[in-house]
Length: 185
Ligand code: ADX
Image 1 (cartoon, rainbow, N blue to C red):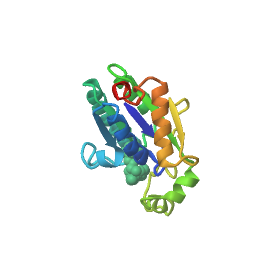
Image 2 (cartoon, helix red, strand yellow):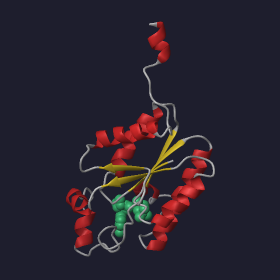
Image 3 (spheres, rainbow, N blue to C red):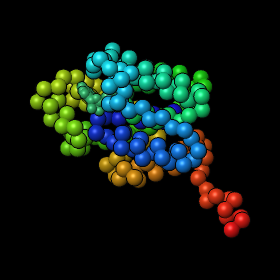
Image 4 (cartoon, rainbow, N blue to C red):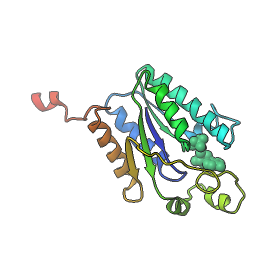
């Protein structure tokens, strides 16, 4: 389970979408669980209180653990603002599979400028309450397995960096020029 946490507009979904085909090319069956999508199905009806967010993350974690247990890779992109929730999810997943916490990092000032969905503008004007980084907390991972600073890397570079780190950690195999092809051609 590759778990991307970070502020809204930090780049989690973009990086996740780029990493999925990289994992598939290494032979993994991959499921991508994205916060925005999960909230239209599995977590439909949940809001953004601390309690609802913790429920959301625990549900995503439960599904991720189940899917990983049968051998697929799971990429999660969800704000997951609470350290405690992330720790619990790790514990659940690590009973049967590996868990990699990836902190997709960009300062709030940059995320506000990106504001892809126009939500920061609404949060800053008070139209949306409990907005992460503005009027609700984001507890930065103290010791993430991988950190990606999306202010200094393009999305493609971020995804490549993530894949390279996963290889270094031996979580995924290195993609090699096919030995068979190299040998027989
Ligand atoms: S989490 O806090 O429970 O992990 P999740 O990743 O599922 O959040 O959903 C975050 C998405 O919901 C954001 O990308 C944004 O599009 C939308 N959203 C709507 N309201 C809020 C809010 N108050 N805080 C953060 N995100 C919000």
